View 1 (cartoon, protein in one colour):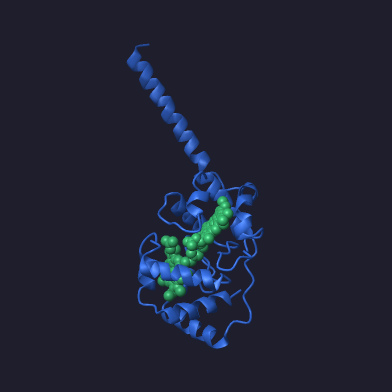
View 2: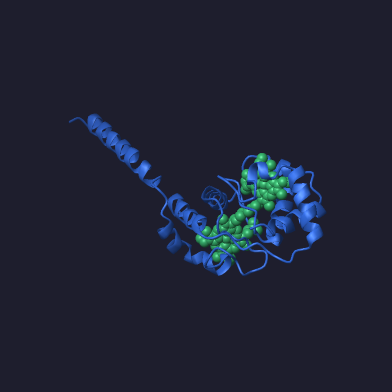
Length: 199
Ligand code: HEC
Ligand code: HEC
């Protein structure tokens, strides 16, 4: 076999191996493996994905695609904050899918009771007027790549929505940035208290 033929054959093999291994990395995410891989996350995000630290995001019951997508954003340094970009620097796509599958299986964070009733009512009205549920779901429970907001920490919600409004946090396709642009601080706060109150 000539050198050219040999190298073509090797190239062909490499292509074949790639073609074989690509579907493998997209194999069904493994939530049990994800739980083990998420042990380093427990200190901040809680054993059950419900954080005890004020202002820290709850991850429990987040749609898997949303967590996966945010982890990718941190790894690619398109989103920064809380040292997350360092924490996830060495995770593979498969690790992220497993971890995301794990959080998606956990019971939703408990609705926060005792919030200011007037603010909750105001937040509900604004959320309806602004069609937030058209993307975040009827109960703001999230769907596909769109994050769950119900039961989320209201401090976290407020900080992120302000960041999305100012552009300090770039969103994946600009839809959330434009949804946030016209909101006032008072409106954001009311919606944060409202969504935290949802189960
Ligand atoms: C030292 C504390 C800490 C550790 C450890 C940590 N995180 Fe985070 N995480 C944060 C903070 C703080 C934020 C909010 C970042 C911001 O302000 O944008 C965050 C944000 C996130 C978000 C975005 C949530 C959302 O709704 O937008 C995801 C997803 C996430 N972390 C997953 C993980 C995973 C998975 C691990 C483990 C591999 C992990 N984190 C480890 C502190 C931590
Ligand atoms: C067109 C679809 C769409 C609409 C409408 C929309 N959102 Fe979003 N929202 C998204 C997407 C997508 C993200 C994730 C952004 C990213 O990181 O790229 C997001 C992220 C968020 C976050 C950050 C959550 C987290 O866990 O990090 C908050 C808070 C939020 N939206 C609140 C709202 C509120 C309040 C409204 C109504 C005023 C609203 N959104 C309307 C699609 C939408």
